[in-house]
Image 1 (tube, rainbow, N blue to C red):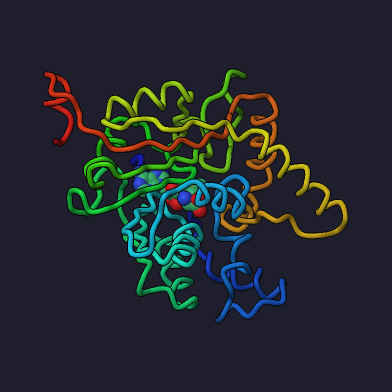
Image 2: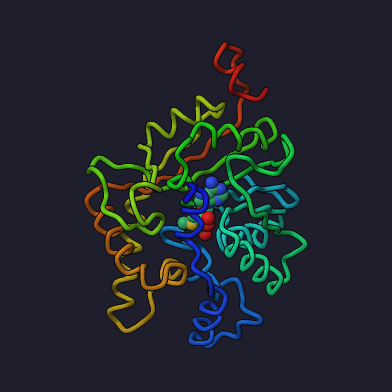
Length: 290
Ligand SMILES: C[S@@+](CC[C@H](N)C(=O)[O-])C[C@H]1O[C@@H](n2cnc3c(N)ncnc32)[C@H](O)[C@@H]1O
């Protein structure tokens, strides 16, 4: 199996929409007309769910009418949140076909299809013009991408000069290799964790200037404690995207994820950086767009 199909078959097993609609009905929500808030436990597929999306959005300079790119857009929760909050246009791209189909359908049900769109495609070769976007973000995606510099160069290509990029990712921590499966990969062969330092170095090499790097472990611990308390009191966990997408496989992945985070094998980080000009040198001339 090729790298791309290995990733999409990890995320997609078919029947996603039916499972989502059943879960919404169980929550007392009409699947034909859910609100952004009712979908949020399911369609923000990253650590801390909607809370992390809100945190990220609070720190970004987005204006109404901006063209924003969501790389690895999943079920589209973050894209719809950004469009609704800022009145911006959001283009999502994701290589998992089933996620794109469900993302389009949910977007139509929320009446946001004039502002939010989804393309099926690879983040390493995106179907967008040079300089097309005012900003881009990517949440819990780069862990699936082996060639980080090629990824960051491709993102840089589609951004206008001076545009921002925000990565909300799981980085390699000092605690050693995590155990698999994890929510983003069944085995180590499709997981490519980089340390925060290596991530910053790769971004700089690709033509970005780092503005902020945050370790969000404290927020993650706090969220996990609050979720445990809700479950112990008989409620549903506030973040249910991994269970929804991975089904039975989620149990082990979630347990391993908790241990990896506790033992600092993984560290959640948020990086904000800007596209800058690449100094003309032999390497940059060969590998970077102007
Ligand atoms: C953990 S999910 C996160 C989804 C979304 N960013 C969110 O936070 O709700 C990771 C997503 O990245 C996508 N992905 C992984 N590698 C990709 C690539 N090379 N190009 C496009 N999408 C990719 C997967 O298909 C999956 O939807």
